[in-house]
Image (cartoon, rainbow, N blue to C red; front, side, top):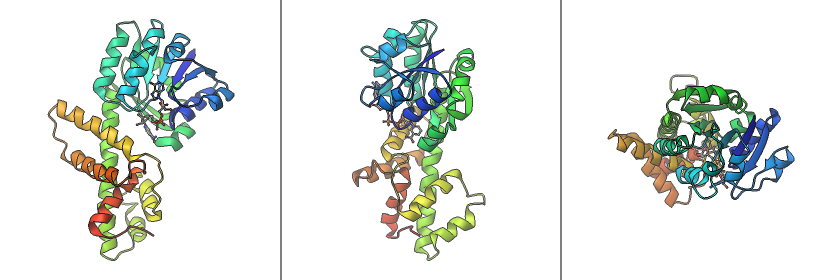
Length: 293
Ligand code: NAD
């Protein structure tokens, strides 16, 4: 089975390398990023999204957002122009569920099946091949590509029809953002009230308030290290998709809206490329107290 891999950014590059390590035959393409190290690791370089699709049975895309995926798949010299009938497109980008459904329908009209399969876990888990992968789409296509996804992730779950993977990812992104905001508010209060934040962390991390987010982000806050990780600008993109999806269904999401406005303020302060743990900086500014070890 020949796999095409499009989008060799922070996430796509290590994911593609894990497929090469597992012995898959890969053809790769990125519109802007260099392909050299992936080619050195054994991949063939494609010349366009169309070219990659024409050479592949399964085409994986790992791109920033809905417009990029639309362009790569439906745009000029796109995947849709090269893909053979019977091919499977697996879009692993985090995009709007409605966009997944639209692109999936266009591909279906050409006999190509699309799954949306966004991931959670960030660059370290992309490198380790231990991502959580949440998938939407046809069950038979899911079973066909599952062994491939298992080379990139330790959890691979079919969540429902096309778009369900990205709905699940939006839920994930809401919970992560609000968890960081809650941790920030609580740790700023504790610091201002005179208790060392590292003491608070050690006292509560094993209890009900403990979380993967707390374990990953509090040490970054204590060190004042806001190097990404997951950039605020990407989280803004995800929350915008969450707000759009919620509002299309008239679902009020007041907490999501609140943390989105916090991220807007941080963007104005020049922190859009900082890690999302920098949400604490907003609360620190409000309270005039810094959460540092
Ligand atoms: P990135 O910006 O590092 O990589 C995206 C790549 O897509 C770039 O190399 C870019 O050149 C390429 N690209 C853009 N448009 C293209 C086109 N039309 N044709 C071909 N290539 C094109 O982004 P990333 O951090 O790898 O994230 C990719 C996706 O994964 C995003 O949706 C992101 O939200 C999601 N994600 C990221 C993380 C993370 O920690 N970085 C974690 C989980 C999920």
